[in-house]
Image 1: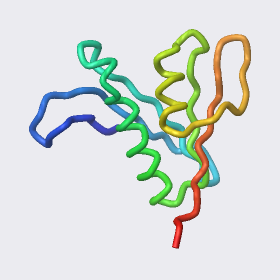
Image 2 (image 1 turned 45 degrees about the vertical axis):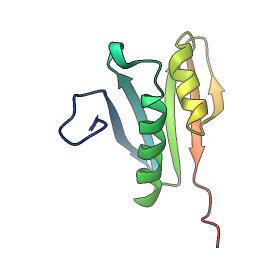
Image 3 (image 1 turned 90 degrees about the horizontal axis):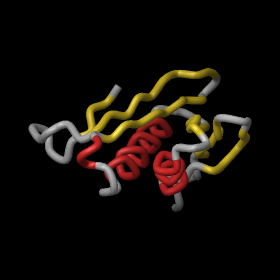
Image 4 (image 1 turned 30 degrees about the horizontal axis):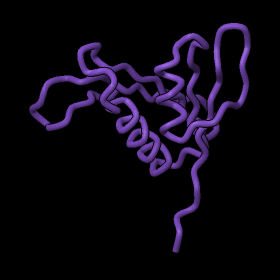
Length: 102
């Protein structure tokens, strides 16, 4: 679990949790403090967490979001996740590492 802050000693703005899944796949989840929502904090933190996961060797980063959670779906999409599957309650999204450009 990572604390999301603008500065090392700044107030807590949210959290990102990265859980090991299997075979190079990581599952992310995020939360933003209610008074700080709508400021792209979760999007920036999720992008940073994805970059960290890929730098640590992950092949794919996953997120499962409730279908009715429009804000978290927007965060996932803005952070580079694409829909992989959906059922009656959840949307399963995946971010894939892209090779570094020379």
